[in-house]
Length: 218
Image 1: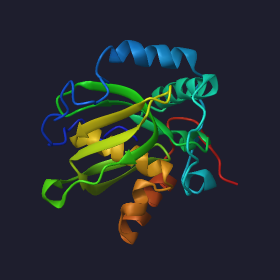
Image 2: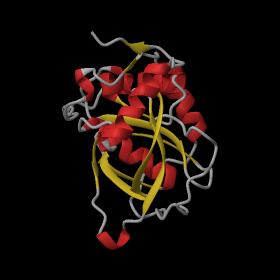
Image 3: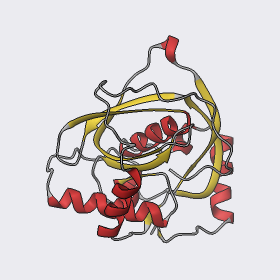
């Protein structure tokens, strides 16, 4: 997911995940962990809308070993190069259900982690509070559009070793978790827009030049 177009915070409250609830402690040593990943990794170019790998459900991660660890390192390096806050594997052309994130919550607390085989929990209707805010995507470079999403999200999945984990977020971080999970099931955020807003986002993309290397579509 691309960084917000402005530095305006998304109202959404603070995280409701508490230690001991089974949520991954993704705020601990966030800076050091992210740095270690990207120093081991190699930045790769970003796939953009129209590339087939972005428009289909990715394969489940079944092997939790050195290759997956190296992929995650490359994803962190690629995310930093593109100045994003989240990145899915298919955004660097890899057909696997894994995403990484380096995203602040609404209190400015930094969350860093990786999730394999993510599944977004369905919220009960009474707990769905929509946040209508700007959203951008590294695979739709330079474009932004307003999109309503729930302001709280819980994602269940596995870590790089195959252990079960869950991650929760509010506001901007919740948006990131939903955005990246969408990617791995073949959806871009523009697929959730009206036809007019989608057309406008694609126009923005065509009229501007991305600040990072992208993979040209044939």
